[in-house]
Amino acid sequence: MKRHINKSFFYILGLLLLTGSCKTDLLDQVNPNALSVDRFFKDAKDAQLALVGAYSPLSTHFMWGRYVPLVTIRRADEYTPSFLPGKTEGIITKSTDIFLPTPWPASYKVIFRANTILEKVPAIEMDDTEKNEILGQAYFLRALAYFYLLNIWDNVPLITEAAKGTEDFFPTNSTPDKVWEQIISDLIVAQQFLPVSWSAQDAGRATKGAASALLGKSYLYTKDWGNAAIELKKVINSNYDLTANYADNFKESTENNIESVFEIQFQTDVAFVWEADVPGAMKSSMFTNLRAPIAFGGEWVDAVNPWVLDAFLEEPNLDGGIDERAFSTLAWNNANSKIYENQPFQGSVLDPTKVYAKKYTGMLVDGRPNDGDLGVNTGLNYRLIRFADVLLMYSEAVNENGGPETEILSALNRVRQRANMANIPTGLSKSQLRDKIRKERILELSLETDRFFDLKRWGTLVDRMNGNADMVGNTGATADQIRQSGHPEYNFPFAEIHSRAPIPSIEISSNPNLNQNPGY
Image (cartoon, rainbow, N blue to C red; front, side, top):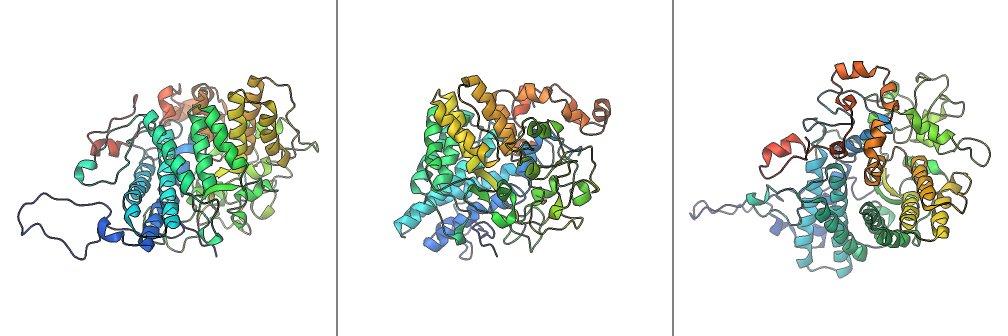
């Protein structure tokens, strides 16, 4: 049975301090039974429990268990999102969408708990190595939470201290530049404090390699190509490698493998408390039923746009066949395309005219039969950073920085060789190499969350979203029918304002200091 850091958690009460200004002795009382922050942090055991509490929201439904993939991956050009009026309305979201608000407070819960650890743990008398490892993980978690907050919403509050009173509950928007500065600063410290690896019992904790990878990714997103290459090279020169089998990156039986730099830990639930951050409950990967076909327990009808399959079919592998990554990424009408328990797609109940997601749907969960509810209640981990992504980011950073072709191609072709694809030849221009690298990200990383962010940071998002004809045809309805039914993402044109989600309306209404993103 798997034992990972955020598969269960210590639910810490009393982290929100209640401070008062009553001057009468009668009212100025201390409840000896209340658990305050100052009374909680006594020794190393308390520090470790608080750290587990900081990891915990990552695997709840509020974040990677369900709603962060919902808010991010569904908005890219890979999918045609289903029509759910008032819930989540696809590519162009509304501030009133009921699923939009959940990742926001969950992310700040991670940040608040990390801030508390960073303030309280230094004063604890304990082993210095253990203390630094705890602090390093807190820095990493704060940076990770801000990375996704920033890339989804842009103009988010920057909070680096635990709230001391109600006056701290109403933060203002910061700027993306300041948040990026904090992310980078946190990861530089985390990298110094974190170990290279953990024991199997502690699988899922942040490592030095995870900090370097996220730091390199942050530099890449801010176009600091030189520093991005330096940090990503550290990961390449460390203890990671590509798995021999591409599909092993998406199976429950091969989690936390040599290619995994950081992944969110899940387990099959034994307790169901919907959308609650409570001990021992809701730690399964419920994102799978957002992608699985309805015939196999999928909740919605998000469809993969055919251009993704076309990208795999454009270039044969060295044996003259289809890029083998396609068969782990997609399910479609092909004699070699398999679905659950290696059953053939052809002859199944799936629509032969459609392309379905296979990655992160449960189709690659070993021994999982088609029981009509396949998309729920799995322990499938979500791989946030894979070594293959590090190699591709490194090749991009070196290319954009005008670095040596040998370095670029070495990293790029290492990814392609695992997929039995021909090496990219020498002698290409910087622009040609850029196109090759971007194409490879589609083949290697499709349906893994970063596509929307890639388009956004490349400056191609608006053109790509407006030019993606698949999005209308893939729904089985005409554009007019979709618009008449109130489906707002087809009220094109997609504009620059849609590159960031609206701040949830509940956050705006409850915080007078918070401004809505421009255009919403």
